[in-house]
Image (cartoon, rainbow, N blue to C red):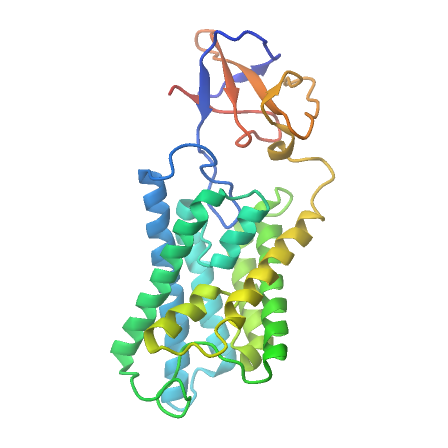
Amino acid sequence: MAPEISDITTQTQITVLEIEDGQSGNHSSSQDVSGPLVSVSFVQKLIGEFVGTFTMIFAGCSAIVVNETYGKPVTLPGIALVWGLTVMVMIYSIGHVSGAHFNPAVSIAFASSKRFPFNQVPGYIAAQVLGSTLAAATLRLVFNLNDNVCSLKGDVYVGTYPSNSNTTSFIMEFIATFNLMFVISAVATDKRATGSFAGVAIGATVVLDILFSGPISGASMNPARSLGPALIWGCYKDLWLYIVSPIIGALSGAWTYDMLRSTKKSYKEIIRPNCNKVSSRDRQEASKDENCLLRVVDPSNQNYFICSSPTKIDDKCNVTCKFE
């Protein structure tokens, strides 16, 4: 149903309805802020994160192995393009299911910006690390990468490692991940951006980051991307760098873009509990610790209901309700 909003009511003997989760998925979405953690929807999201991360790691690292094994036919730009195209394809394929994070640093950064529920972060990270680990195991089996990979003198190691000093690699990982998260926040969480091109912009950012940081740090930008191969081959040297730096970079990128958002507050910020100041004709900002209730009229029978939610209310103050 598409109810109209009328003035707020203070009556208490009215059913409170949940807001439907009707938002299309991308890197940005605030998803399932309320409700049970273990649900069919959440399991579907975890499967989506697993499939997307597995595909991304397998395709990107396969390009690395092919390049090193067969006389460098792929080249650095080709490897960067494989990573970027895979990210883009997975965003358009799975974004509407899970939000297409595929990266623990992205999930943590979204949660820190209140655009993703903290209680779902551990599940997302587990699915992402599992996808990366199984992708690395598959690569080891397919290409028979067993000989002395950690020393970099035997078979190709598809993990990440500093080719320069740790300090230089740390900085490069920070900058690359900052760029990635800044672009994700811009194109996938800001309503002023053209959301249909989010996948293209994010994939292009991955290509750009790999081109300038790949030869120095490996351009991980993703703790799961580095952790999976490390677990399969037992190569843990300097692994901390690829966990700490991407997380700090993603947090900085998300917070920096938050400062550039429109001066008009989002409804997520202004709609909070026990506020009686909102209507379709006269929207007023709630105080920082309040949450607004909206009186919603069903046009089919003129019955009205009270809907309460910190999200899922659009720029025109429209909501969609369903019975519990």
